[in-house]
Length: 129
Image 1 (cartoon, rainbow, N blue to C red):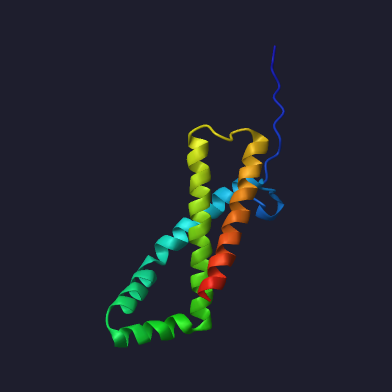
Image 2: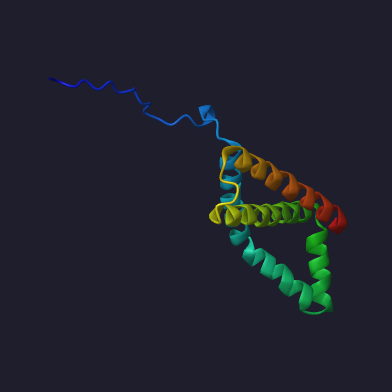
């Protein structure tokens, strides 16, 4: 008796534009991207902290750097990265404690992470702009 296995033809390349990632997967990828972005921008943030605390002259340099529209946009992006990383981190801690593992609960918590991180970014960004 021979057993015949029918194999599905797999593509030779991965078509990323055809993959439909679920919302929890998007939140997970954004969590990683935001963490990498925050890590890579840490020297810039430390430089800004040094400028702000050094002397009166360095504070004026800090004000000029932070006052530039591109710097404000970059800092707004870093603010979102921090807020998203923080909110998604809380979600992942709850998942590690086996809270919200069901499909609908995971989808809802993903929506909450996206909405809360964007809302906090807008609120704090408007205050700081």
